[in-house]
Length: 120
Image (cartoon, rainbow, N blue to C red; front, top):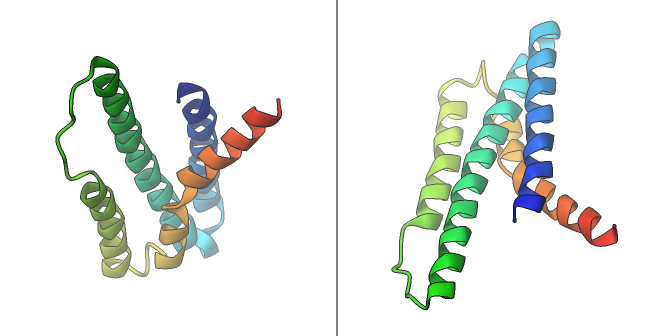
């Protein structure tokens, strides 16, 4: 999982830095850049939570133990809901559409990293 997560994380950090630079130098698109950055941050957080959960599940399966149920999906959905609430509360500063687009960044980055790894 580390070999897929590292390139996706680099892509997310590159996207965040591009959003920051665009936000700083192009005032007309500040809400879009802020929304995209907020969404990418939420996506990074959710993928880190999911990565930790998968590693725990793998370790527990290797040891032959059962893993108790948790609130994994609810916690990840709550993060995206929080991003939406911030976007709705401050629409002049954060774009809701770009925040939602950014919240799907890491799954697509992981998919692309997996496809590129498979080809090489």
